[in-house]
Image (cartoon, rainbow, N blue to C red; front, side, top):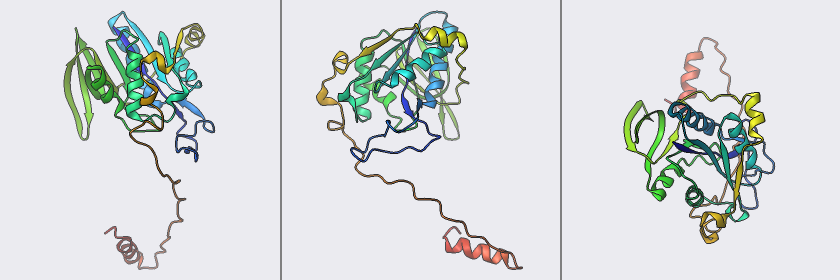
Length: 260
C-alpha cells in the first residue's frame, strides 16, 4: 500500500508569530519554523499502516519555500521512505483552493492508495484541503479520523465529532485527515536520523505539477487576508477585597460585565 503524507512547515506556535505588512502573508523569514504538529500524527499513522500491511512505501509531500526541505527531512527521520518538495515563487500567497490544486498536481506524479494529512495546520487552520483534494482527485474523503482499520480495499474510520465519534467506511483510494487522538508519534532514532540523509527528495517546480501559474499565488487566489491586527495586550484584573460584602461585590462585578 502506497501512502502519501502531506506535511507543512509552519511558524512555531510557542513563539511570537505575525503576518507581513507588505502582503498580509505569514512572516516566515522572522519565525522559528517547525513541522506542523498535527502532521506528526499523520506521519506516524502512515508508518503504522505500512508496518501492519507489510509492504508499500510512505512518501512525504510538501508545498512550500526552500526551507520546507527541513520539514520533509524530519519526516524521513521518523521513517518515511522518500520526499517530494514542490517549490516555486509563483505559489507564494496561494489560498487553500490554489494549494489543493498544486498538491493534486503533484499527486498525479505519484502512485498512491492513501493520502494522509493532519486535520489542520497551526498557521492557516482552514482544515479544508483534505476535502478539496478528495474532490479534485475523485478519491474517498475520510476526515477528522481518530482511528483507522483496513480490510482489503475498504477503510473504516472513527470520525471525531463533538460529543463522540462516527463510524464511516469507504473504498481506496482515500484522502484521510487525522486528529492528535489517533496515535502517539515516535521520536526519530539516531539510526533514523542517519538514514534520512541518504533518502531521496524530489524537487518539483509548479510547471511539473501541470498547474498553470495563473491559478495560484496571492493575486490569483479566491481568498486573501485584507486586514489584520495583533491581539490586544491582556488587561489587569480587578481585585475584590472581602470586607464582609465580598459576595455582593462579586455579583455586582459580574452583572456589570453582563456575565450574569
